[in-house]
Length: 220
Image 1 (tube, rainbow, N blue to C red):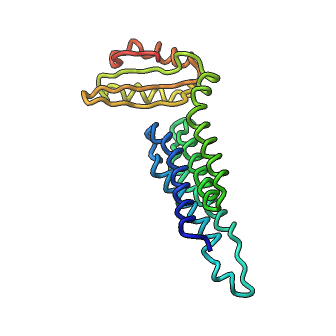
Image 2 (cartoon, rainbow, N blue to C red):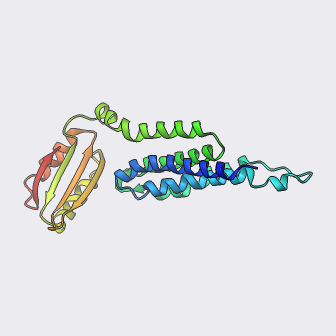
Image 3 (cartoon, rainbow, N blue to C red):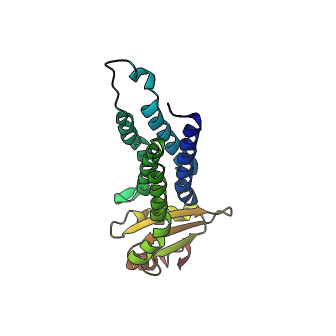
């Protein structure tokens, strides 16, 4: 039978690994942040502990056999519903949340590994996941993008922005990678658009630059 202190250590280690990965998602203000990742990791670890050690009394009976890996496999398939909830499908094939969903899937695997006593496997995966999510992002931006890949469009009011924003996002000619809206307390609105192709941003800026509803346009 596994000792109580060992159970606490495994659950605590799983929570720590989940928190480290969740901090990166929290930094970007995703719904699945630090606490969500911690809960997934701890829950997966507990499932693994229960699967491996929770039925020892039953196994003492003759003609009884259990497969601990069955619970782990159900965690792997079951985490899909939570990951799917973080994926947002926008218009014209724009999808957000895939990285967060894959992060939750990885956190579940880390929890299973730590719950099974494979501390180094869980910690190594945590370090690799943080490297992928956090440290590789600037490298990715450097390799696959150039300068002026972000366009800021400022509006005086939300009402002025709706038609223009719809026309930009619905245009299939633009390869829009990411967009975000920032509404200020004074009622002004800023649309931030990121694209792999700088010519798309220049095209958008040129098309709406003379529109009286647009307050200003900046490349960053």
